[in-house]
Image (cartoon, rainbow, N blue to C red):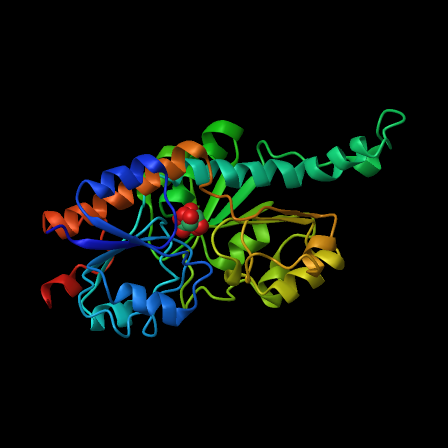
Length: 325
Ligand code: 8YV
């Protein structure tokens, strides 16, 4: 008899067809289901696949047969790893396949904020373009400026490559580990967070959301940035103290912000962030291209097949949980 899995967020047809070759499939709309309904659904299956849904002790409370969850994401902050370990459930994710696409999104925000693309597109659409534009509508250059990348992981490195090799930018980075390849290849310079914030023209957040990074960019950090510097966040919204950012943008202590992620998503239409003309907001589209989302879902499906059918654990965040079974 085939193992039974729960798809808690609909996936592309080709991906669900691949899963159906190996598993009996149950479905639930994880974004709308309450924790109790999700707990009931997880209690019936050996594996689960989906994204963007918080899974912790409550959802796992009756999951006695669950062995593996495959998230269609590189971020794992929606999961309570201690609760997964307590249930001996392994979690896999989808690194690598989304790296380049997400780095493209970061640079879309860099260019859109620096050159005021959204604001000026609205200016044209509103019929306000009556003559050649004046200095009041100028943006700032990106090429050959200084970019500071907080978190030089896979995506951070891809951002650094675009910056150095594509735009001739000077690259600063801050993180727990030295990256000698980045330093050798394009002169990236490891520096303290304060130094990076004080020197960068573009500050890019590329850290996972953890207890250590939650709120890491607050009033103090924003006050260290140059007043014409631009903040870019395509990692997780909760890394920034949004009230402090609103104040800094409103008071001109930071020039602009490009935000693909928010502390609470979807961000509320009446958020003060959305009323600021120097904010370019996107609806968490970092990896959201047709090609990449299929590739991510396929990788998640292969991760789940490997775990439940072949007893292999590729891209697994907590492999030790498997050994406890
Ligand atoms: C999407 C992401 O939110 O991979 C992540 O961690 O944040 C984005 O790619 C995720 O893939 C859900 O579809």
